[in-house]
Length: 75
Image 1 (cartoon, rainbow, N blue to C red):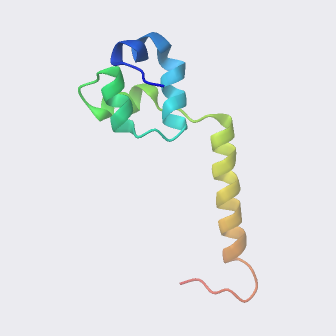
Image 2 (image 1 turned 45 degrees about the horizontal axis):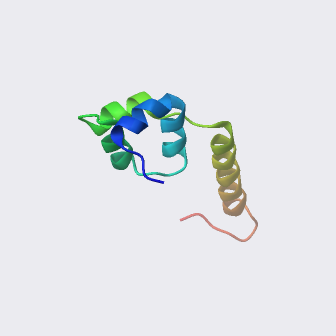
């Protein structure tokens, strides 16, 4: 699926956030929406979906759990 910059504008903010949360490089999203700076794109469209926040929390919990397991020492 190829989307032009004009088409990207038509998809709206929600779709742009999904692109970023799906892991599409911010530089790519910046160019698709026609922003002059990547900062504007990040500030405008970056949000965290509840599922992504949950996955991040689970990953952090696993890391803490491994570090506090008996027999492991912290560096």
